[in-house]
Length: 80
Image (cartoon, rainbow, N blue to C red; front, side):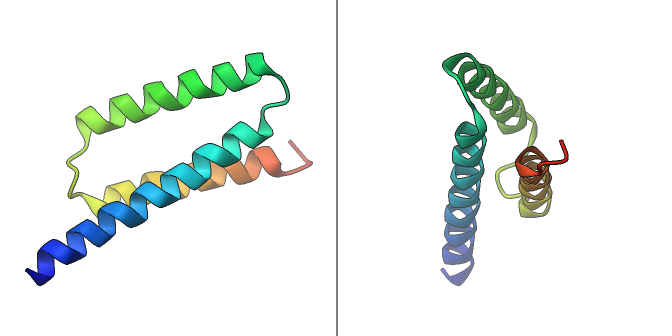
């Protein structure tokens, strides 16, 4: 039972991080065309990863979340 609660908590934590990053990417969109492009890229990446990655592989999912955060930080940086 404890393990199941840990897995459920991990799902919720990953989901909330993912949604925060997606919202961050949408905030960076200056016009509707940019938003549509970002939405299509994020949707395609999400679908691809959801088919290829086991839902319980939290190590890899956390890696992808860190990668997404890094990409979002690069977009937010005034140097890029």
